[in-house]
Image 1 (cartoon, helix red, strand yellow):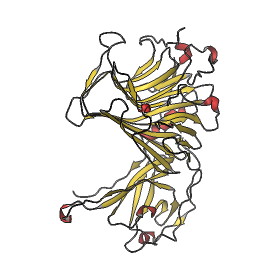
Image 2 (cartoon, helix red, strand yellow):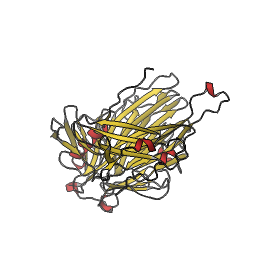
Image 3 (cartoon, one colour):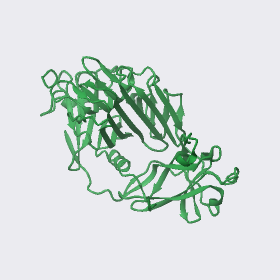
Image 4 (cartoon, helix red, strand yellow):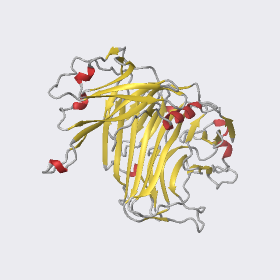
Length: 474
């Protein structure tokens, strides 16, 4: 085990994910006449970290009936003065129409249509940046924006295949989704070859979005879907969002959803996941957000792989401590002759038993210069039917058993006892229980202090703040 002392301040740091795509300065004087709506969206940087290409998502709305495909008439401009700025590429997602079908319109909510717009923002440290948003068309002005310039997209996401078998790449990574279930099957840092592929040797994905174990029945994972019950792809070269949802394959009373969002120029993938129990269920384990990779059964002395058919994908695990240090554990150094990890004070096979809300957890290969980290933003558990919420050993579990893989997971429910003891038993989970998490999966190049992981975690969990000036009174 090695402890690395981190710096105490974040000032003067930079989180820069690529070169600028903004246009040359343009005049926006009079543009408000060409659109139905405009708004100055002020973003403030409060963590002392300069931001480049930070994803920002905003919902824009027009009353119905709006112009057909009104969302095609959107501009995002980073202001340099009140009437001058730079056009910024943006992505619109699927329109949502709320058009009440009631005879008496006076008793119905106002009909509206909304879309989410994503753009990649820039902001100096401890500063504010204003983005002027223009959207919709004035009544009867179907061509009002025809002569206005648009932002060009350079170096956006490279997307190939059809859902669920997508391949998505940018200048930081290439991600391949499983052709059956749509989970992340493997990942590679940009510029690296097949020997640096992060994966699990078995023909299953490396990202286990959600899973439930109800012994004596077997495990049920999201990757057990032969095809997602429901799936949808939206977005494009700036931001691509892929949703999967529905009942799990074996336990039909458990519904799950997993959503990946990929961004141009950003080295992480945003992941949100939910699990809902629609009936009381006896379960030994409930987990969200697991990364599993191949690892030889036996130790690999001197970093040499003893079996090329079972590559050692990770050489180390790492996570932060509450006092600001980072704990790193070299897997080969803690394995016994049978391939189990042995850490004093922990059960055999455990590399680390951490808080469920540990800020981040990383696995990497020091010599091959790649790694993946889960950056945690939030988690939730509740019961929408008023039932009790289970409180049984929530943690983040890092392990290397004698089997051909090493992994981390985020248990929402786990037994209190060791395997085979009287306390190793199922928990009754009440109908209506909902678990949810939000995190990012970062593809990074490791260094001795894991600086990229720490900086990306800061950006992801302390995003630019929207300076809302208020409204009402309501």
